Image 1 (cartoon, rainbow, N blue to C red):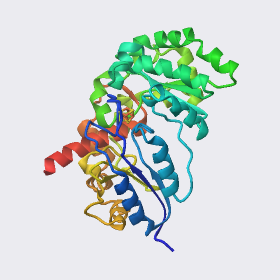
Image 2: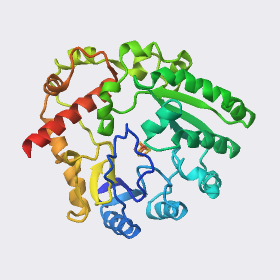
Image 3: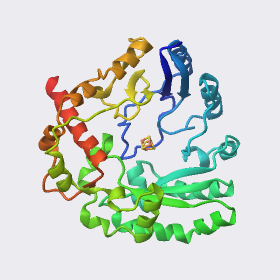
Image 4: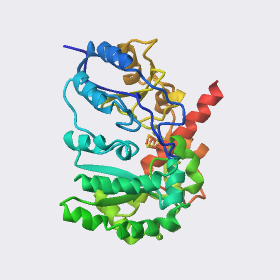
Length: 353
Ligand code: SF4
């Protein structure tokens, strides 16, 4: 009997063609794990887990030219085969005619594309020239190849005024009709997205309570349906002021229960929990200097700088330090706590250096 039931290992072999302003993982510094390293470290983890799930990416899937081999590698190294996510490389799909056919072969039925408005805004927020025009072309390629598109729209105060224009533009492409004719679905939804990592720099652009009324009704309706919730504030959140007033009374610390062991392993072989920003306070260890078992124990016993600090810091202390009582920006409570926690961690880490 091995010590752990299941461990998922996600290696950054590929990087990402985008430089999204809202990226919660990546801030320019990523590297590339080699195939040999993937094989060697998966082998090392075999000794301690009954089941391993292996991925050769965690930024953009299928970005590397040998994506087929890497998919096979994942299936071979994983204890059980896994399905392809509803995420694809929208960079590759227009550059490699085989790719969409292969997506069909591996059973992809639906995939998600992200817009931030029309051309200039989508290019700006994605951090890539031609991102918008390529996404539009990708929509057509997907439909031609019987894959249902799902559109995710991130809204900030700087792009809210053109969200209706984006919906009108999508209407003008007859996407829904084209999908219907082929028996495909066409869904879209919006939200404000994560507010940690690079997205912390978007705080000034965050939606306020007043902005919610400007979101097109059709998009609100579609978003409620997508998230299967009834109230608008379950999608976009409530004001920072209300959250602040509630949370400064909270004497508890945050609990970071570990349900699954899922590691993100970057090009330097540094290991992070899958939900965390790649910052030094979340680093669990490095595979070159620690044994797999030590890495797992370090994590499940909460030994990272972040876990240790969060465990002993009352929520009210973090909110009193970094919350803005007069702010009417809207956040979901968990997202807001992540944001405030990250600010507190950064401050404490720098102070302790
Ligand atoms: S958000 Fe996703 S697509 Fe954008 S830079 Fe980050 S990993 Fe790449």
